[in-house]
Image 1: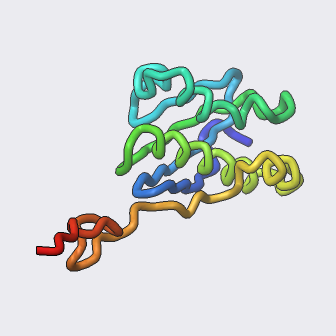
Image 2: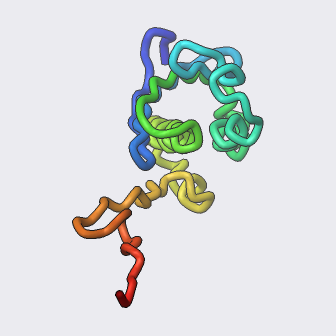
Amino acid sequence: MANSTYIEAVGRRKTASARVRLTRANNTTVTVNDKELTTYFPYVTLQNMVTSILKSEDAGIENYTITAKVTGGGISSQAEAIRLGIARALLKEDLSRRTILKAKGYLKRDPRAVERKKPGLRKARKRPAWSKR
């Protein structure tokens, strides 16, 4: 694979959407919205969430430059969206990774999202206080 070619995939979580590009490189670097991973995600847990997929695989995965453009959602759902995007891009490159990625749960798109507010209620399910008189 030449340096100019890349693999692109989309990952989503709640209202966050991430467009991820993987390019072969000598070492792994992760850039999110033109910022370093540690700058964009200040918490180590979120950084680990994004890079856990690279650490769980065999050594052949360690050599990618990852560029992600993320919109919407909070930083936690953005991190999960990037992780799903990386997993889908790795799968596009080599289908034999499917069993490993699926077993670890990286290919699952989490469907949970905020429920809409219903008329007559205060929130999605919260009812107004009942008073007898």
